[in-house]
Image 1 (cartoon, rainbow over the protein chains, first blue to last red):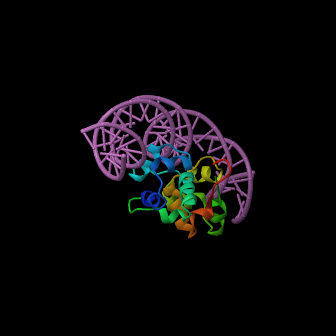
Image 2 (cartoon, rainbow over the protein chains, first blue to last red; image 1 turned 90 degrees about the vertical axis):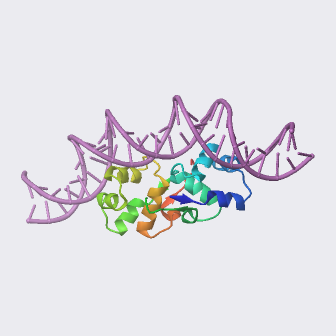
Length: 66
Length: 66
DNA sequence: GACATATGTAAAATATTCTTTACATTTGTA
DNA sequence: TACAAATGTAAAGAATATTTTACATATGTC
């Protein structure tokens, strides 16, 4: 799965730590998500999409291997 | 978090096992998801939404406690 | 009633997410 | 250069997701 969190963060001028606080996770969780180190939970995806005012599908996209 | 998987399954006339095979998880995972026993991964949410041709947000909804 | 199919549930094991702590590296700026 | 802020990364542990196996219950049909 891919995601465009880093881009959205840039658009909204948020640091990883800002975003982490907004959605209630650690900064490392944001960092790891951006680096595709793991697949986040649906709750996180919904919170991030809501914050950025975009559909989940526009931020998180399935890859071939999923 | 709430979800309407059971309803979508009824609309599409799919058994829990049908759906499980479609998206590549065990039947118990579907059953537990419907019973809100846990929060699924974003990959599962995207797969389910894609199968039912609806946005993730229409099937999975954040609750107060999230 | 007997049978098949679908669903609910539970426990143990495994895999994965997420936190915490800590440090290294990068980048911008005085 | 020196400093601060942001980012990358890693390792250990806690919490949670998911599988597997297994059985119970419900529901429809013969």
